[in-house]
Length: 210
Image (cartoon, rainbow, N blue to C red; front, side, top):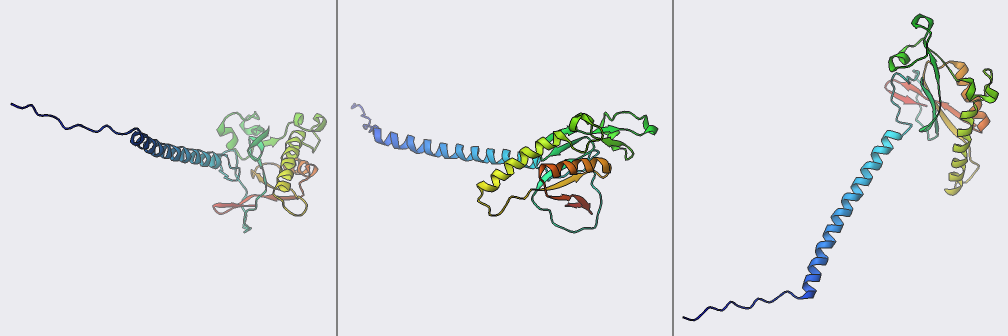
């Protein structure tokens, strides 16, 4: 009986292996790069949404005044005065002193429910004012941050090639229970920093406008 001979199998050439390997690597890299790009974009969007100072969420620390004015928001520096702190954009500048009324013990606000009372008293501690004076209307801690922010905005204005002189504009997003004295201190400090145009954010129905 004659033994059967297997037909010789031709080994793949080196060039063929290289082409196949190169093709597989190329597909793998494309998919990986696409997934990385999508992940980066999603992370950026999540961070942007959570850190946007214009995404105003009213809570026990911030409740805007109501109005019937109908104007569209304009891009500007956001200065937020809530019942707990003062911020410039997303930068926390200084805490706000909160004291409950005499009927509620005349004590410092500590927990979330303490800040919900409409009869609380709010102020800026003198350690954050010029010369540590209680009577001063210049909030030095706020002034320093505003000057730094404006310096950066001026550089950006020049870098973009914008024509005309840079004019600082800010929108004050203030809780409706913050007293006039405290608002006046913030406004005075804004003026000394060089902010010429100021606007206030208020609520109109379910949306806010400056």
